[in-house]
Image 1: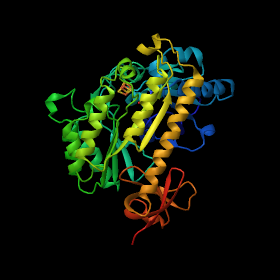
Image 2: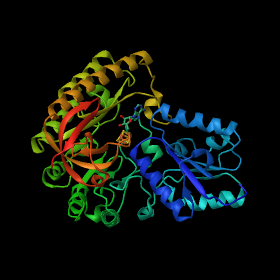
Image 3: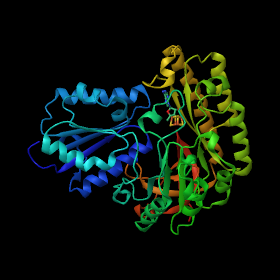
Image 4: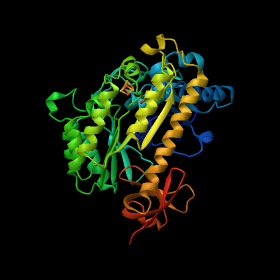
Length: 439
Ligand code: 5AD
Ligand code: SF4
């Protein structure tokens, strides 16, 4: 690269945490004088913010990087960030000699220096620290939405489920100081934002690593709920064992907190749960659900499920099927197991044949479709509060969400964007509810 970098493009793979990291990196690059552009092919700086959670996620990036290597992108600086940086480190430079830098999940703050070093030395630069240091400039974050924002509250995960790479790619849990979170949320409200989603691999662990702060997750929620002008608070993701009574009470009592809890079950068989090191049995999970539903009767639940974990029998799978039928989640992300390098489960034989995994996945998807469609029927004719977020993809209708995280499409002028509306649900198509603003 013989000229100064002017434009950048970041392609994001994976979870909301990665989406947020992209927005944080974009903020840093803009502060450095670069401009974001929509066209990947004409950017001076191209970053792939990657995901390692499943095999497919990694293969997509490897394919893309391979293609770029064979092309003629000589005048571009190319970087790889995120989980694959941590999972593959030096192997990436060996496999992709055209890659200029690799930055791990804990080194986002070094992005500017790394780019300077690449430009001045013309060598490949790698930064992949094991520990996250809390010194990010969150206030510079460049967000896609002007209405709702993701806010990081805790990074890393200490749970070590046997199938999961996250504890290795994102390191151990590090909570962000409450003052810093409050400052960012207040600043978001000043800019007109109405909703924040607090992010962490396990938000319920918030504050455990810093007992002297005296601020556990429910305490943080109470402090955020007091911010004037903020309308809605959400959070993602919760580990079932860490959902406390205090959190359930917060969901009942704090008016801004949306009654939606994503707490992955993963499997309905206690034998498989034990092998997954989920540290709860199916019965304990059901008890948590009962307790939560008795304290917060209108709560909606979301889950992640893995099918085809090593040694999963038909009987184990049926237990997952029955659990989903019994609990009736509003939202379920269902995955076929894939072995991840460096995890304990990788040492076990991946013994459920792919066609069996696929058939199990399909059965759960069909069950969930039925449950979601029943839920939509029940919502017909009723009125819900919707935060109008943006134009729908067709550019004509508006799109928003209910407090229980249901997507609603409605008609109305663009001035409704960023406002809360009472919306009467009159029909639905596929996963989307259609509604009309109640005057
Ligand atoms: N194979 C399949 N799914 C996985 N997940 C995590 N690791 C794996 C894996 N090796 C799923 C879990 C987790 C979600 C984010 O991804 O369900 O909750
Ligand atoms: Fe992975 Fe388990 Fe941590 Fe979730 S709780 S990020 S599945 S190790």
